[in-house]
Length: 79
Image (cartoon, rainbow, N blue to C red; front, top):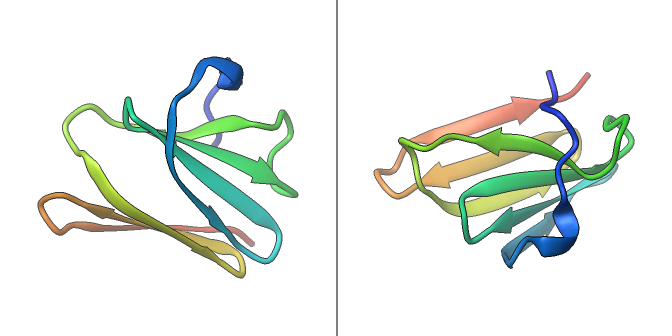
């Protein structure tokens, strides 16, 4: 489930990716914001985990894939 809406206007974005129905943006503070059809309050924070640092993001179709610095792959899939 999505976390509460956050103040995106002050986020320093370091990476973006676009899928078929959604887009994601990664901030320098390791927050992943999501925009699009599956988000009720756009943008929403999809990911904010302190013990992983996201190295790369990818969005496509109905999925968002994250690669962490320690090479873990995290998949979010939307129905």
